[in-house]
Image 1 (cartoon, helix red, strand yellow):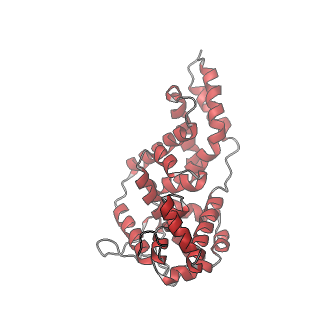
Image 2 (cartoon, helix red, strand yellow):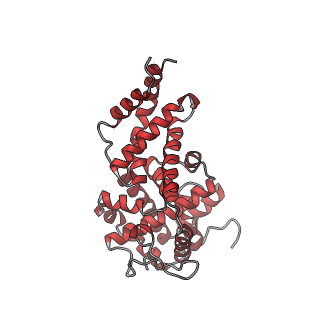
Image 3 (cartoon, rainbow over the protein chains, first blue to last red):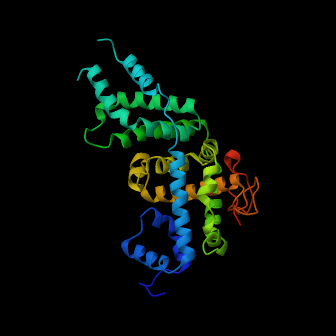
Length: 84
Length: 215
């Protein structure tokens, strides 16, 4: 494989996590994109992985903080203060 | 500074990060009650150490460091994780087996987002809870607050390379645990770990969620 050629499918799949985390060097990213532009299967894989991460993130962020938590914390902290 | 003024100042820092702090505690402890206790305890520790916090620096990272350290220290006191090496080996073996796998690519058109939406919050909570604590901390910080590797590294005080490997392994383990719950992910689903452990033995993983190859 020429040094500056697009990655083959196996290399793209092996680097997918780093690509999604934007942790690849610029040259590595270029070689990834060059492959994804021409390979429908890997492009679909990448898109799916991105969507799964986005969905997981949305689901995990969907929770409620107990309404009284802040008040309870501040009461505890105030009680910990020495009497002035 | 007067203590009551210090409390007001601390509150002004804490309020904007409380949701992230509670969410982190919730996924780390797998319990609303324990999450509240953990956030309370972290708040007390942070308030007592507030004089050491440098204004203008990242309060969220500072607070989350206190919170996650408390949690991990509690876990270390309770028990060690004797199967961590086996768990990591199983994940790595599965990942290396799947690179270049044509079935991996053929699954790419499946409506994974639709399947994920069918899972209730408890299923996601359970999947996260099944991760070893160190992996749970990295994944929780990543998904909950979209922190960068560097930010997670600063909070957990571990090398960026460690953050990266734990995040990648943790995400894959979550992905396949959740797919197993939806019934999607292949024919081989069982309570046993199908990927080869380093010693060639099969062991169930902690939490009862198996890391079974979806092939």
